[in-house]
Length: 127
Image (cartoon, rainbow, N blue to C red; front, side, top):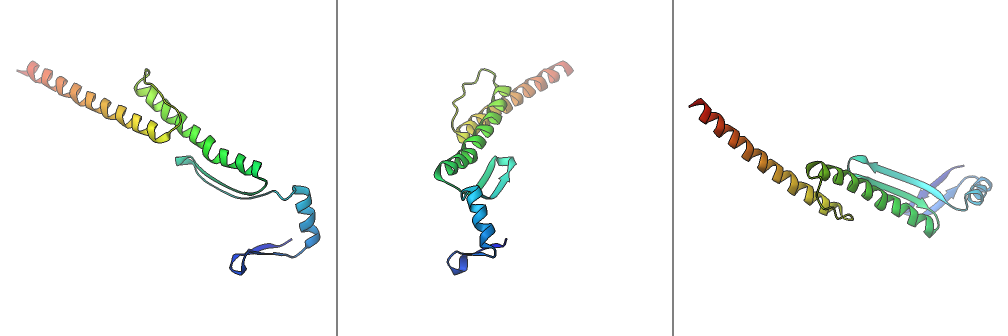
């Protein structure tokens, strides 16, 4: 069976074998999984389907909800590693990224202060 979509001609569908095409549509009830794209480093997933609205809603939740939750869990683990008592407000990746950046900046500042104190103590011991 050959299917091709010619968008330049207004989206006409060319089917070589209508019997198989109709059988496929009957068996799948018109549901088709067209394409997906992933970028795992940024929890990005794109799902393209031809299906009823409830399945499109499911695909949307998988795209946005599931991967958003995964990114949030990863950020929360990093935050808890820096500050086990940190207050976590779930729901926004941006908010969690800002909280993590703030904690990392505070840790870097404390490390610099500690290094400075250690250097001063070593200088006093050398004199």
